[in-house]
Image 1 (tube, rainbow, N blue to C red):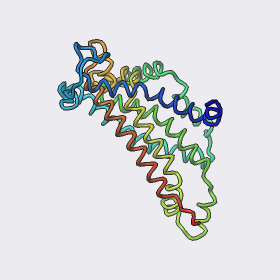
Image 2: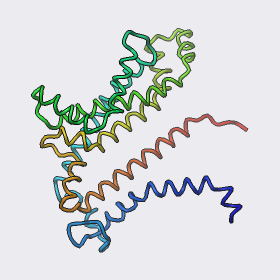
Image 3: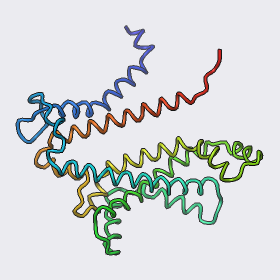
Length: 265
C-alpha cells in the first residue's frame, strides 16, 4: 500500500484537489433536487423535481439570468475584439507611449474591485448617465479588456513570426496572411480570452452592484435572495450553467484532439 501510494502520490493529490474544488458544485446540485421545509434551502429535507420542472416560478430569477446572459454576450464580443486588437498592437508594434499603455491596460487587474466600482460610479454620475444595463456593460468591458490582453499576449508571444513571413514570401497579401496563418494560430488564445470574459462578466457582483441602478443581474438577485432564503431554482440554474460549461470544455478538447496530426506507425 505504501509503495503504491508512493508511485501514485501525485495522482491521488490531484484527485483530492479536484474533489475539493468540485465539492460546492456537488452540494448545489444535490440541493437543486431538495424540497426545503421553509425558505432556507441549506439542509436536505425531501427529494423533489419541483424546482427542475418549474424553474421560472419566480419570474425575477429568469429575468435576472437573462439580463446577465445578454450583458455577458455583449461584453464577450466587444471586450474580446478590443482586447485582441490592443494585444496585437502592444506585441507586434513599437510606438511612442507603448510602455505607459501597457501599464494602463493592466491597472484594472491590480485595482481592488470596490475602488474600481466606486470610481466607475463617480464617472457615470459626472457624465449624467442613467445607471442600468448599459453602465453595467461598459464597466464590464472596461475590466475584461485587461484579462483579454493578458491571455492573448501570452499566445502572441509564443507564436513563430517566421510562419507569417513564409506566407508573405509565397505572395500572400497581408490580409491573407492574417486570415490563414495569424488568426488560426492565435485562435486558441482568443477563444480562451472570450470564455474568461463571459465568465467574469456573468459572475461579477461588486462592480455591478455599484453601477446597476435598478437593473437586477443574476448575482445581485442571489445576494438579495440570500437575505430571505435562496430558492432551489437558483441551484437548478447554477447546475445547468456548470453542466453546459463542462460540455463546452469537453467539446473544445474533442475538437483539439481531432485536429492533431496522427503519427503513422
